[in-house]
Image 1: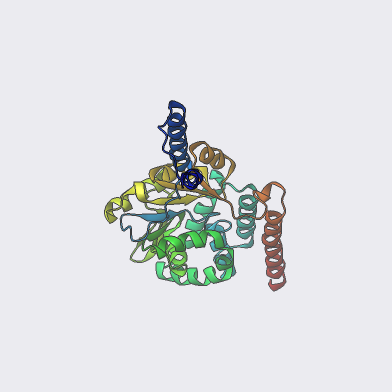
Image 2: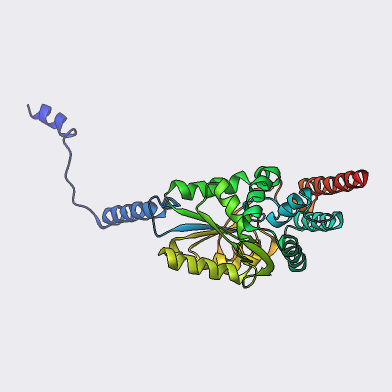
Length: 307
């Protein structure tokens, strides 16, 4: 009997008091487990936030939402409708080619384009240009919308947020583009009109650089938005004032200066161009330039044949 009990004794758990070393081992293990659980990075919060009515998104247009400059595409459409001469079309084509190749805005080119556009539309009715803008969108702009940027805008819309274009392009053009993309609306440069007819002057100055930031600030105030919960998207360092206003700035197809600034401040970047900064090697950009230049040459040849 005693033998049997002795045999069973090794199966019975023995209770030993914890030594200092075992206590230390246990505490170390618990601490390691706690730290390892804290080291797991938290999941990135969903953005945009569904149902956040204090948030909105602001998108630059040229080279952010659309390849190239809206004003230049508009100029091509107006030439097709005989608003101006061949020599002006050549200037528009050169400016657009430069913009596509360099990937940045040249202030002198943009000023020339605005001055040309204002002189061209002077005396025309606002309603007429709005109607033509619809046609020009289908002809030159619809196929140049960046799908990636369009998806970003749609994400904000799907979250129940308003989405605005903010551009130096004429507000009539910007409004057409915003409506065709299903966006909320547009902030753009306002050309003066009297009794529905363009005077050839601007109201204030072009919506560019700091003026964009002021427009966004004013709209946010009017709409009751919290800018720290809003997002802004642009390709240009000229829009750093606008991007700096919001809590969620994005650099889209950024120029060199904006890319450096965005990396320094840890802003999010998205590049939808083929082979990042393709203009440097001149592959897809050069193809676009060739298309514009070729179209210009064809238009000039056709114009000469008609004379």
